[in-house]
Length: 443
Image 1 (spheres, rainbow, N blue to C red):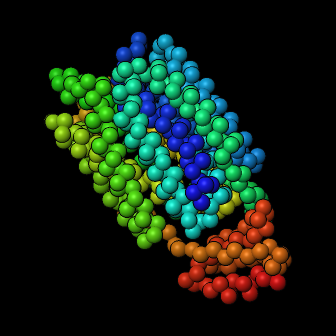
Image 2 (tube, one colour):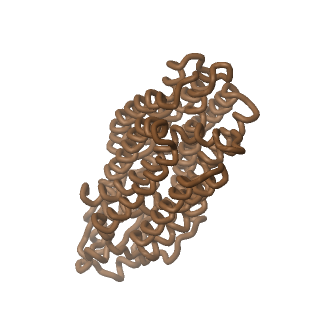
Image 3 (cartoon, rainbow, N blue to C red):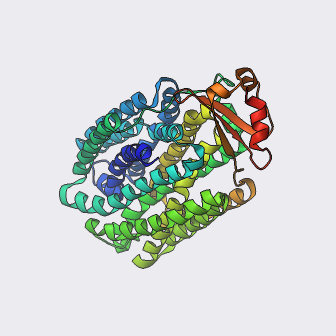
């Protein structure tokens, strides 16, 4: 599993490293450009997410049809072009264009779907946790390096570095990423968006994913501006080069929390409980960031946010890939990521607008109330997933007629791995034995 997942995780992590490097300082940098307003700065911080939202579903769906690798290459190329434009920007609108193009390379859903193709569902949680861990490491590295490199060489250097990282990701794609197996699913011919949104489990995870990403952008608009603003303006007057002292400990605590959260969520099937704890941490984080009168309290709020974010991250993607049927994975992850990125854009825009017309205390109160409503909804509506087992059977041993007519209340789905000549049946082992299942499909 490691050899299959790490190259893909590395590609996604390199892309996120480029995006994360600028996040700690982008709002300060953008605010210094001619014509900048808090609203426009918020749009720039979350701008990449708007085009991500628009292109996630097309990229995910196209990857289901023409293959994951070609789709990944196109996405990385667009991301590189956007990074170069952002690096060369001379005004706030050119920077905005670069950010929009960065987001247009919407490969997140494709990578996640490819991981789902390459590893069995029984270990997919570990694979998603591995991917989430590498992204979190990118997050930690970026939080430490971004403010230091940005202060020393300028934010344009960070965008050039991002373009280079995209080139390295392309190289990895064609030298280290395995080709996923061809999967045939004959019981459905098409994937309908309505089918995905009607599934209460998938819908619940889509909402959680969207809320998490929207709050992330709000945090990255608020944190650097509040920490570097003058005391008279409600800030703490820190220097840009000191911001790493805020982000790095927060990410370390977040990384430490990720492991136990993934174990309890996956191994012990306690994902709902992990989500509830994470939402409580979000509520605490934004109340502290809104009302803190000292840097220490504010940093505690930042740490609380990153712990909650990192506890959620690997579980969200894993559960979406579990709930979606094999022919829906690309589309389901595309829809989920599309909505998540749209919320990311809305989060940045909301934060900029609120800073323009109000203050951080009001924002802290609003976000606290939203968090409480989200907590109540999750407690009432979300359920832990049912546990399934998988039967792997050589294709030659299966009666094709019986297989194509296979319908049973305890069978979630079946599909054929044509590359390895295997039939895979996903079923509830607590309600149905393997022997019963074999009688239904074996020759």
